[in-house]
Every structure is written in structure tokens, then in C-alpha cells.
Length: 129
Image (cartoon, rainbow, N blue to C red; front, top):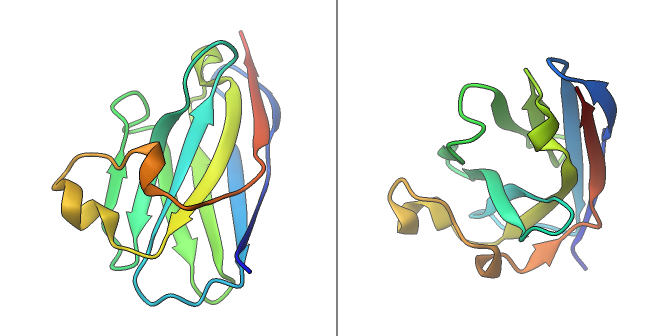
């Protein structure tokens, strides 16, 4: 059974940094895409960053240059380094996974929420001005 557990959320002032982690267990696929989504109160869930098993990455325009997605295969852990945080980054952040190199299908675009079959419970990020 695949489980994704996020951690690292918290409260930070504008301009600060946080690193989110997503520990994956029961996930043994050689080809996969893992991503971070977020949902702010009253808004739809949106994609933030994604990474394929071949190392390809994709970012939402709103976070390019500020957020970095990475993975540690030895630890089965996905990370999201968030720098220069803004109040508009405040949201619940979710980790997602799918046993397919989704980025190869989107050719520079970003996978949709419905493309991912596995989800974590989320970790809250609050950025104050």
C-alpha cells in the first residue's frame, strides 16, 4: 500500500524559507512522477512543482526561481525547498505520486491533479506579511 506523508510545514514571515518533505512508502515503481500541489482557502488545488523519475522537473510560473523540487531516492523522500516566501504562498501543501513519467506527456506543461493517483494528507504553510 502506497503511503505519502508530508512534513515541514509551518509559519514563516514573508521572505523566509521552508523545506517540505514527503516520505513515500510502499512505492516500488521504476518510472513515476511526484509532485507538490497546494490549496488555499476558497481556491482550487493548483500544481506547484513536479519531478519525473528521470529527473525532469516542471514548475508553476508563480514559484519559478523561488521553489526547488528534489528527491532522495535512497530515502524515498521528495522535497520542496521554498525560498522568498510570499503571503500568497499560504496554503495546504500536498504531495502526490503516479507510476508514470507524466512530464514526458505534457512536454513542458504541468500535470493535472487528476493525473495523480496517490496523495498525502497535506502540511500547512502560512506566510505572514
